Each structure stands twice: as structure tokens, then as C-alpha cells.
Image (cartoon, rainbow, N blue to C red; front, side, top):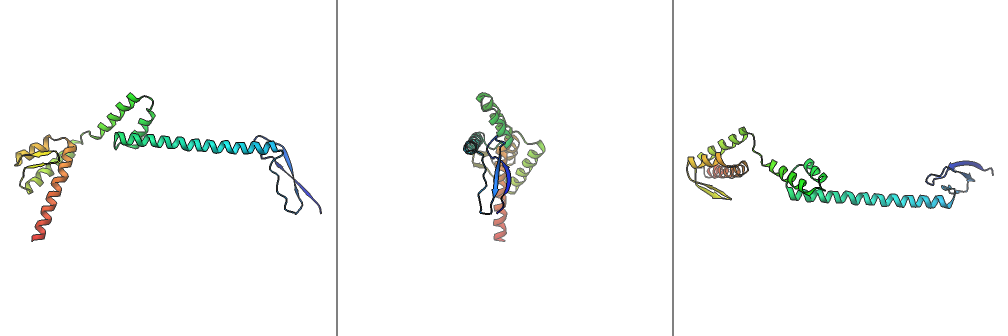
Length: 182
């Protein structure tokens, strides 16, 4: 039986030796390494790569946990803002100031047109309800158009939004009751 000789480069890291591969038709396994030192170097390299990958995954998990902590601390700010706060993690005073500024940014007034439209809807719905006095959830409005108008025009937007949804729900409930009785 004639043997064919083939050559293959050693799979050891940094080894350029050529390994003679013999095909005899008897199913010999291919040799991958020229020496046991190259085989052990390859094993150690795979172990180091696995350790490096585990460390990388652990570092990513730590970053995720810290960003989640920032998200809980500063509320519903954007992912870009969370990334900015994470980048400022070594200077806590600056990070806290920036975080508070980003949170405050959420409460910046809506453009006047949006607030005035909300005020107009509140007054319109108040008219449908006959401008009752209301006291609930931090809202204290005297009875009558002037009390509602004053409240709608001099209340911070986030409180007005809350009141807007309450009044809208009351109007919807009253309309549903009037349809049911008709």
C-alpha cells in the first residue's frame, strides 16, 4: 500500500513547524501539534481566552447593574443620560449635579400652546361638571369658574396634567351614566 505524504502547519500558538500527515487508509487521526509543548501551549491559550471572556461578561454585568442603579436613583431619564451619568461615575459630586439637572429637565414647562390647550380643556370640562369644589390627591379647588380658572392658570404643569386626567375621567363617567339612563 502506497503512503501519501501531506504536510500541515502545527496548530500550536506561534509555531510554524510543518507536521507530516500520513494517509494509510486505516483512519489515522490527524496530528495537530508538532510536540507536546505546542499542545500544552494551545490548551493554556484556550484557558486564558475562556477566563478573559468570563471576566468580560462579569464586567458587562457590573456596568449593567450600575446603570440600573442610576436608573432607579434618577428616574425616567433617557438611556443617553444614563450613559452620561455612568461615564461620570468617578466624580460623584458632578454626577449627582448632572443627574439632578436631568431629572429637573423632565419637569421643564411644556411649550405655552400645549399648557394653554390643557387649561382650556380643563375649563371646558369644568363647565360640563358645573365647576364643583374638588379636594383630592393634593388638589384643592374652590367651587365656581373663577376658582377653576385660577387653579388651571397658576398650577405647575405636572399637577395640571394630573388634574386634567381626573377631570376628563369624571366627564367620561358622567357622559356614560347619562347614556345609560337615556
